[in-house]
Amino acid sequence: MAMSQATASMKVGDTKKVTAKATPDDADDATAVNGAITYASSDDTIATVAADGTITAVAEGTANITATSGDFTATVKVTVAAAS
Figure 1 (cartoon, one colour):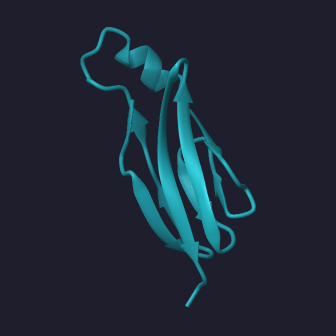
Figure 2: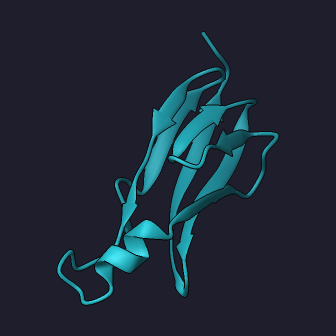
């Protein structure tokens, strides 16, 4: 499984959508893996993530957004800075 990006730099209040998908695309279980992906944040006080992979920057700091499907995981490290 892979994320659309490994890191993301955001400012408080920003939103950004990330996606996860099975690798390789033609793996036998790719459709099942892609259909069962869930997203979670390591710290909802820094960044939250919606079911569709949309990240919202809440406060300054760093959080990991992890996509999970069965035994597969992929992570984006999100760094949030103050809004300008």
